[in-house]
Each structure stands twice: as structure tokens, then as C-alpha cells.
Length: 259
Image 1 (cartoon, one colour):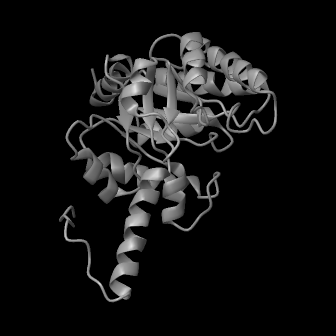
Image 2 (spheres, one colour):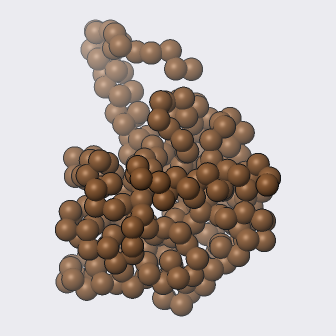
Image 3 (cartoon, one colour):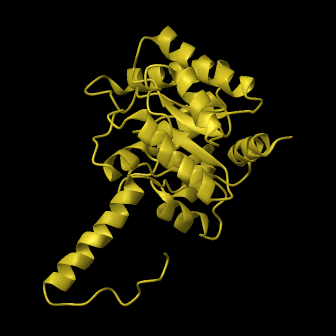
């Protein structure tokens, strides 16, 4: 088995393990190395929003794919754990983008449906799964539905039903897990997790809102990630430190030499 296939299998196994997979998203080499060196970390996930912000672009496929992939390639080369990439919505061709991601060493990825027509969204999932199969790996697609994130004022029951409908279709198309951002309510998480089956649902941890990872694990969630929020944690610490020293103070005493 190739190293790439081994990493893909390792990442897949982490989603079905007894313990929930917790991914603190990274955006460059130093953040990747810092998180990878943290005890208990077994895989990394990139955050497209954060990578785009690093180069001065807004989120939403505004960063050129070449630049995005180059940063991900650098991250993969800098660590020894499996890396999953945020593919956004696939940059116009989900299958082709997944193939290029695999070429730089990625073994999993998020893919947004952006609430596109149902059949189109399912076809994109199928294209990514096919790209992994053609490369000889079990690409770990975290198929994302924006049914909840883009719900607006729609009746909540209908929103959850649509998230389940799309998620179940993505699972049937070959995705091992489904990402439902915006899902933070305990009972809604329980409902969706039960509809998908054990260790099939992934969610994002939102500061001050989300349940702790240990409680998500009890609800049957496979994976929790942090999206752009880890970068915001870092930037918050940076701005707070800058404000303190500019105001006549000193840098935090507990600062560690992590680079």
C-alpha cells in the first residue's frame, strides 16, 4: 500500500474510532507544525477561509486555486500526519480539484453543496469519490451541506429534514461523513446523527455556542473541526498582546517558543 493510501486509511479509521476526531484547522506551515506537535493530534485539516485571509483574499473561492494548493502542499510536506483540505465548492470542477489536491498529498477534503440543485450536488460528491478511487485511495470526503447554514427564516423542521435528505444522499454516493455547519442544538445534532448513523456526522465548533467535544462524542458525532475560528483565536491573542504593549505594558509571560 502506498504512503498516500496508508494516510487515507488512517484518516478514515479516525472517523470511525470510539473517540471523536477533533481537528483544529490550520492555515500555513507554522500553524500546521504547531498543531501537529500538540499531544493527541492525529490529523490536520486546512481552513480555506483562513488560507485566503493569509493572502488577503475574501472567503469563497476568491483565492486562486494555484495559490491555495501551493499552501496546502507546503502544509502536507511539513507534517507527518494525514491532511484533509477544504476544497470549498470545488472551484467549478469538484473532481478535477480533488485530483489536484491528491497530487499534493491530500487524503481527504470538505466539499460545499452551497444548496445547489440536489442532483448537481450529489454528482459533485460522486466526482470527488471517483477521483480518489482513480488515485487508488479511499479519499475521505467530508461532504458538506449548507442546509442549516443558509436556512434563513425557513421552518426549522424543514431545514433539518433537508439537511438529512442531502446528507443521506451524499453518504449513499460514497462520502463516509457529512458536514452540517450551523448545527449546534443538542437535540438537532442527535436527530441528524441518528438519521445518518453512528460516526457519520461532522460539525464545527463555534466559540461560545457549541457543545464540548466530549458531549458531541456522546451524541454519535464523528468529527468536530474549528474552521476559521482557530485563526481568529490566534489573531485575537495577537491583537490583545499588541494592545497591551502599545499601552505601556509587556508581552504575556506565558509566551512559548513554538517557532
